[in-house]
Amino acid sequence: MNLRNKVALVTGGGTGIGRAACLALAERVATVIVNYSRSAADAETTVQSIKDIGGQAVAIRADVSQDREVRHMVDQAVREFGTVDLLVNNAGITRHLPMDDLEAATDEVWDELYDVNVKGMFFCARAVAPLMKSNKQGAIVNVGSIAGITGLGSSLPYAVSKAAVHGLTKSLARALAPYIRVSCIVPGAVATRWWDGKEEQMKRLAPQLLLQRISTPEDIARMICAALEQEAMTGQIITVDSGQTL
Image (spheres, rainbow, N blue to C red):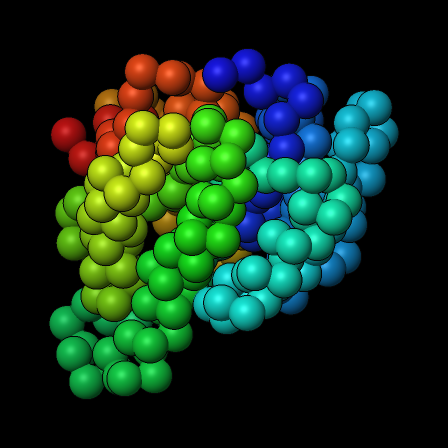
């Protein structure tokens, strides 16, 4: 699929991988909807960066864990641009908890992470699916994590939620075929603000990777765009981790 003049919705688009995906899409002359929940200033900065390179973008607030807000966001997008052709399900949260502290994985933590990381992706896909079906084409990329493959990560509930994202990808690929393609990009360590305060840990990790580098948000964004463009692929879980899981 040529992304030129397509309308792309990127959740969590104000920072990190989401921001990089927004800019990469704009470079491919897609119109970009920058979704945010709390980071209004960051989202508006992303929008301005797109406009500065001659692109078209708008920021729309919605908490993806709330189906009503997601549907309202998509309605706004349709009023503004007529449709949604592409969805990048990037919004995600975590809690930093010791993996072996099972008591710390409370109902509140499980519910919060699943509501955003899993149900939020489903809500967004469900909201845009009728538009894509009507157009007889569309593409969705979910952003997973190697935590969902290895079982390691910032917390046990986070790792399980990302494993669920990988499963959701395959189920949506079946449910939305043949007109809508759904794949998942699975980053390893990425140099984003999630590493704030842990920069030394990141520096120690890099030499241990096969490629001896931490991925950048731009690395992941390029793969997101490649998955959106690839018309012969759906239901795939694609790892981008500098060899971290080998």
